[in-house]
Length: 139
Image (cartoon, rainbow, N blue to C red; front, side):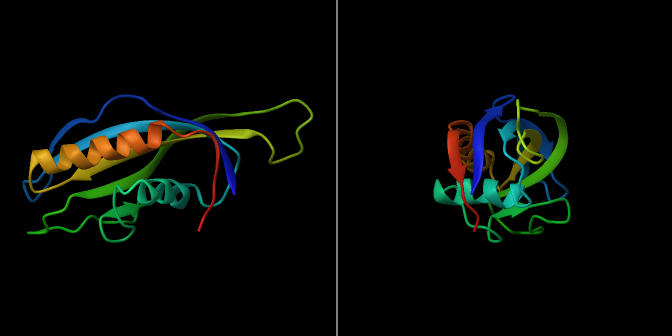
């Protein structure tokens, strides 16, 4: 289990234009304050799956190497990618690895229609930004 102090959205989902297949894209970014772990993106996926936003490797994908299905795939599809992070929070008398890290993630949603993309983006936005002072287990 990994303790999450908070997940904060930097903005509401906003339009990002269209992808190479002409599908609408929406994006928002989140900042996280959490204990260190090696399964950060997987933990975010678990939050989204538990909230009913989607299914991992079906319509939720994670990591820079992940690819959203292209062509006539309808979606909606969600992609989580690590972005730059802020320095760790060190706490008084905390052993090594006991500090809070502050990673950031870009959340991109693609769908055949803007309405479908917006619905999934807003569902993900809502599911992530309510996380406060809780343990997130993976798997």
